[in-house]
Length: 138
Image (cartoon, rainbow, N blue to C red; front, side, top):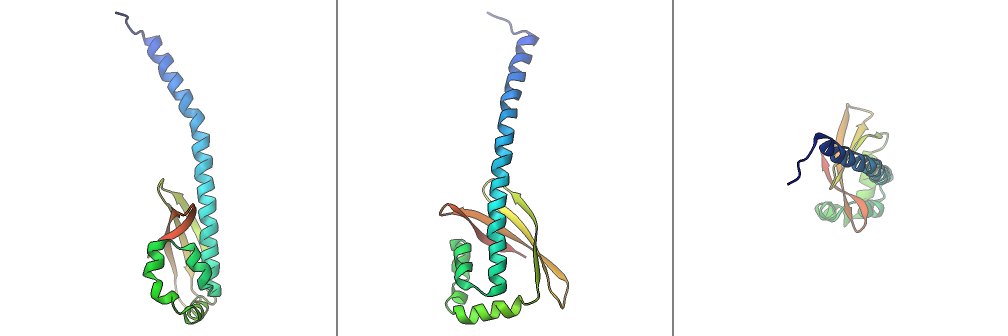
């Protein structure tokens, strides 16, 4: 029976740490790519809210959220006009994006001209190979 020396343990430990260090840049780059694509979706969504582009909004939201908003999207002209009026003069900016493994959270600040600002968290998931907004947390 062979005894394990402290130097054997250190050699294995350092080898494992080295292997893990090689993975960290890959994970970081993948997270940044996810966050960048999610930010693009959120910015497109915010632009669509401001212009009342209901068709674009439908393409940016996930199935469950689309189903919840189904009644509104059945009248795209009315809903589009409502959105244009509601978001007129509203400043919208992405405050932060966080990758949460299975989903991405995007915090967005809405600055209304007549009231305080509000921050809403959008939850994005992968659907049909693209990031889509699945939920809004007020």
